[in-house]
Image (cartoon, rainbow, N blue to C red):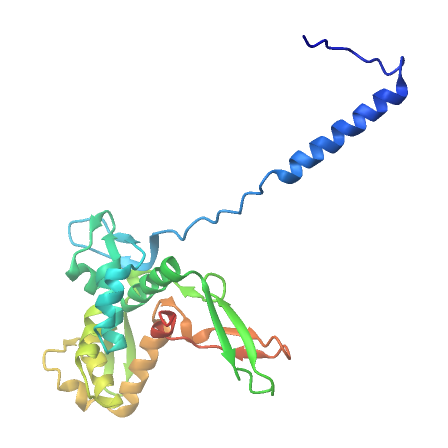
Length: 275
């Protein structure tokens, strides 16, 4: 039989202090033996807010998309393609599962602005590989020693948004007022299909897809694009580039970890998937 004895500190202060010290030591041992839980980081959000969105006739405007992480089946399909541009198109078709509240329809995916499609590719990359891109080598021209620089795709990449009303705009040219729309997925696919083209020919592909009218006359004969002056063509392409929404990957810069000088660190969409 066990007899419990209560010890008053006033009756035996030495013993009471000893027992208190032992109790504190035992509690510290138990605390040290308790495993510390690792911090659980929330995964990237599969719901992406589009930079512009898409107006769909007789339906609610699409402002969000749902994506998923790339898996092994995707990797095998992508590996069969030797063209990085085609691989990016395939990634979108496989990993964008919803536009708005409905399963993705290919025509709607292609109708999204190029900037929104680039934003979705950035989000798919983050969901699959994380936010960090590590660069190593002679990045800073002012330093002799190689550098290691880490880009955080959340904080270091500006995402430009645009009102949907500004998707179409007018560019004053020598030929007159040229009405232009920003490139879409259809434009991107036309470029991907234009293999073995020169830079000037690829410019023509963009212009044929983006010019709506010249002096209020619809661009019915696309050969008119070839009759535009070089300056007009370049002015239109520059305006498209300046207005294009989405992630501004070419504008990334960070201080050099060695000398502190700001270093330009442009990335391409293909770079994001080189793991």
